[in-house]
Every structure is written in C-alpha cells, then in structure tokens.
Length: 78
Image (cartoon, rainbow, N blue to C red):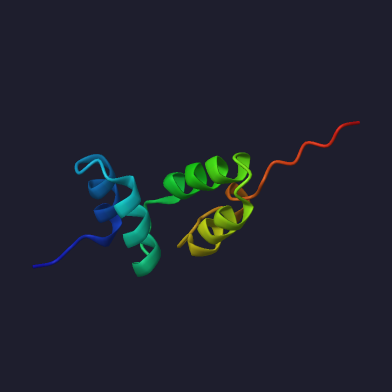
C-alpha cells in the first residue's frame, strides 16, 4: 500500500471532514496541503487572545510556502 503525500491531507480534511486530524498528521509528518488549515487555526487562536497556542500552531506548521501567511496582523491606534 502506498499513500500520495501531496493528497492525504486534502483527503482527511475534505472527505473525512476532520481538520484537526489533518493538522496533526501534517505537523507530525511534515506533509504539504494543510497551509490554509494552519493559517485559519493560527488566526482564530491569535484573535482569541490565545497567543501561546497560536505560537505552537505556527511552530508546528510544516512546509509553509509563504511564512508571512502565519504572522499576526497588528493594528496600532494612530
């Protein structure tokens, strides 16, 4: 049996409807395909004030093609 590494995360997220499992497998195995999931999870945690958890998500993100995608958007009052 073989698994197509480029498609397994999309399968888990889409067909199995399990984004948490997709994130865990992508992170543990350094697989591509979960970039959007990591960005969404990071933004949700960061905006909710869970900065430590957001940092863990960013640190565990594998093969992120654009590291700037996982950066907080700071807005400072003028």
